Length: 620
Image (cartoon, rainbow, N blue to C red):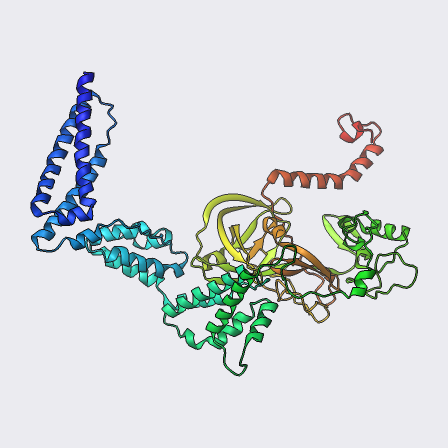
């Protein structure tokens, strides 16, 4: 039995070798071009008889060993490919055509990879379709059904959903192309998108060779794309230069204007880009010396006299040599009482926080109250707060402004929308209005979640959606998971107030320029995003409000005098958690603290202490 199966397997390997040799002959363009019609016919007959013998031997082996691991389907696939090529070549010879073109087409060339198109970035559609038409559509050996299969292979997601339901037949292929072109080959949208990319190019912070080359490359790509869309970019020279020169760093921009030979001659965009390429090449060919700092923009220079008289002293608070006391992180983190006591104990100047006996030469004032002391020594006048019947009573009439921002959010097709959002560090979840989700054509995902607010109010939300948003001033994008609700909160702020009394520095870029105008809140960004956006820098305004620097710009919030605001303003509390047990523990401790005085009074007035009373057992 073993001898017989061994003999059959040797015979099968010989038959497979014959098929492989015929395949090698077909793939050799020189041998194929020199072959006659009779030779090709003989090889075809040999191929057919060999496959027949291969199948018979394989059946004999299977009858002896049912666990035989031979992959017969691979051999059959190879057989059909060879047979198809032989028939094609014989057909050309019958028609009297030369095999030279066949041999050329059979030459081994690198594979052409067609990147798939998902429909999310419609600017990639034209390049995808041009390559598909050149490689697949113009291949005359393919039928329309085969081309349709290739098309369905290379389109995914939204693009595939357009043609997935078309029947598999020849007539469906041109319909599929028409549907895709109608959806994605939209010339106005393409032009608008390329122009927006040019306008949104990031500001060059440093004029290094790599950054300049990347800047030039981005510009040329968009200009070539606009030219392919038949836009008259040749007449946009002055407009483009005015826009793009503003994105250069100050040193490169100054060098460009100094490079002009004739100031009366109109500059061209080609000359602008040529200058930048030459500058990048010059920076690459003349690297900075080891230890020499690269240029980062203009800096203030100290006079030699000032340099010689500067004596570096240790921080008086932590004894570190790396910083003075007004930059000491430990000093900043300490309480205001600790800072005041330290300054008074060490007899430091309350303006410059240094030791000197004469009058301080600095005349700056506190950023908050404008009095003659350092801002780190500003002591707030606290309002008296009384807890009673679950209400907060203030001795001064004040209003609390919640921080709002303006963000750029993108719909399903990449279109930009601008909405007003609330930054809420007291919320574990981010929330979006259902009306905004519908406007953005987003598809929510079913996911049930309990959102709990103040008072243990439980709100069940059944949908979430992933949104993409971006800062208006920074080239930063965020992917945020938001719970979908019908309404988030009331309009914020609740009342309009005048900005004329606020002393906002002109250099500050606000995250919401209309923070004083009541507006609809369509998006709430919770603590998962809030702390990622915070940057160094905050400014105290004259009426109590605080400016905090973030990736979206400076947000405005805090308590302020409300002389021009109604006193009966409703309090807005946007506190949401997803852990019901933790919130219930917090509320239980709060109400227990409210009940303690009453329980103590009852226990002390009782003649006989109750054995089950927790306070009595504690010895209260």
